[in-house]
Length: 587
Image 1 (tube, rainbow, N blue to C red):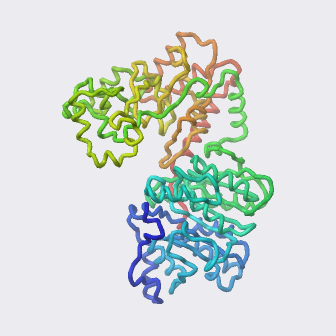
Image 2: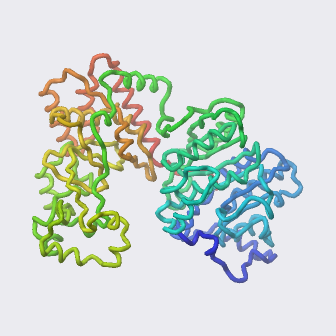
């Protein structure tokens, strides 16, 4: 969103927060409780921190009455108010003079006037883009503490020019760029404002623990601070702002440490009371949970006994990773699904012939079993679903197909980045037929769906290619094993959880899923289990299908009798924790 550039900051005439008026302060205080349009707040990435959480983090960051505090995007001013309270409690005579901040949103200054009074000091509080501000005058060279809830704006919404400018800049944290969201740049810039031995606390999205672009940030924090902790809040604190985003509280203490890198400690707090206890425990020098390099939040659900069971199963000779036997690739990227993926009626209305199209699976839920056949596709087409890809592999086109392609708006064609990347803009089909389908995002764990009749799929689904000469029977065994409680737990461990509790697997993450493929199973037992599981899934009986998979796979010699029961409890707990929990924190 180019409006975030400091040269495009929205201004208002006769801004009331510049004038001292008791009546205005009352108006601003009441305005603070009004709901702004959610769409407007989303564009700015403005999701205000609850008052209770702001105070908890301020109490931790601010240690003395002489501390100076920076809030890079103060928004609803929760952190500023909490910082003032903390400084006052520590005996600071003029707490407001030690608090500084930035925000691009004019409404933030309405909140500021209500919280800190008028007139607003426009030196200490700048209406500007924080990423355009440099350390030093008129601000202090460095701050002893940073409190931040940065804008949650994904890279797609930043606008092409701003995205390029941000990714091409040199930051104190190297390696950020490409697909990074705006919050990542805020952290990368903010560390240059922090004094030696300083502390900072951030309220971040779950992507901090999961996104590839966040890896350089995590590595930098581990190597530049004496200690760092990331605490996942189970309750979704921004539900009232229209987002299910998971929240991670990041605490970093002792900036500029020259000691050996210390892995980030990962923990989970169910409530804000839990968070307070964890911070106290951590400050006392105790570990709050596991240390991480690339751990997922799902690992927080496991106790010592459960970790030991997983480790023991993973050490077995018949335990493999999915990537040992298969390559996972993204599906076909059309660049315009509504134009390229049509229903049978739309194909006819466009004047196209059946030979002008290729059957395609566009939605994973349209393949409910562990196999997707031509018969399944015909039934899907009969229901009116969009399941035909306009065009076939190769460069030849019929006259009706040429005519249909010409209906695509030429200006839009030029602007579509996917088209520019293809040799032929109108040819999305690369001709590579997958052996199986694997979901990108799902709520109830992944399924592997075999593709015996050679259909293709869009990029809402991953394509799976098995090892060369892998038999159909072995493929069926893998499809069954993917549904066992063990493989489903493993999928939770390597996947990324988002929003409303959905689990996502990028191709390399799918390849890291662990599964059992025991030897000695008969042809009949595998086929019987596969066909029964297919029927159960099509009937919507997912739990029974998993039980049938366990009955075949989890009876392998050497596995504890209690393994399936223990894994089932683990899986249930992990999935419950993955799904949103309503916010109960006071604001």
